Structures are given as C-alpha cells and as structure tokens.
Amino acid sequence: MITSPPVDHALSWHRAFPVHPVAIGRLTQDPDVMADLALRKPVKDTFAWLTDRLADLLAEGRANGEFDSALDPAATATALVAALQGGYVLARAADSTEVFSQAVDGALGLLTAQVRHP
Image 1: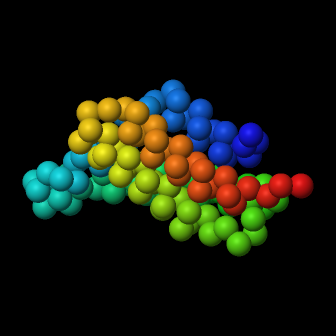
Image 2 (image 1 turned 30 degrees about the horizontal axis):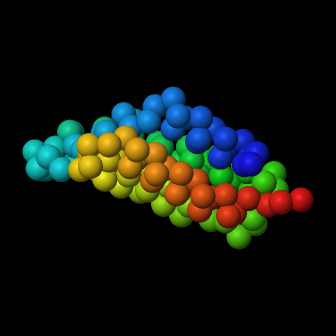
Image 3 (image 1 turned 30 degrees about the vertical axis):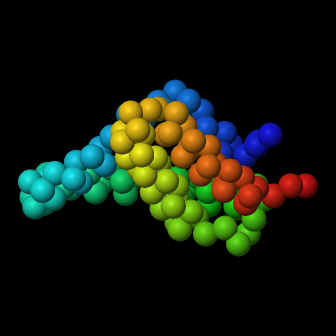
C-alpha cells in the first residue's frame, strides 16, 4: 500500500476526476491555437502549473524521506504529466476511461518504485 501523501493525493485526484483535467491538451492539436500565442498561453500555463505543483509535492516527499534521494522531482513531474496526457489520448482513441485508468495506475506504479520503505 502506498502511503506517501503526494502519491495518495495523485491517486485520489485521479479517482475524483478520471479524464477531464487533462483534456486541455487536446487544444495542442488545433493549429489555430498553436499559431496564436494568446490562445496557446493558457495551455502552456496550465501544463506548467500542473508540472510545477507535482514537482513541488515530489520535492517535499523527497525532503521528508518519503522518496529515494535520487528522485528528480522536475523530471518525474514532467514524466507524470506526459503519462497522464498520453493516457488521455489513448483513452480517447479507445473511447474508454479504463485505458486512462491503466495509464494512471502505470505511472503511479513507476512512482511507487521511488517510495522509501523503512
């Protein structure tokens, strides 16, 4: 059982909002959005906020001894956001929220490998 607060928070967030929070990434496929800085900025800012928030939680967990000291919070947060976004794309292609759940479970499984056990 995972007991790290950052991991627990991520898991509870996923259970409460199974697909919708990463739907903003769909806007990156719109050429008009990508060509216009004013339209692209909210997408960029949302991903930056999410990545930074996760990195902060991971850094806090590492500082508290919950994660291995070798964990790179920024790189791990970026990978988690990418896994969530990729899971969303796969789920849309499959028309199945189960695919998104599998992506989240897989990402959490990789993160769990970094949890320090007393």
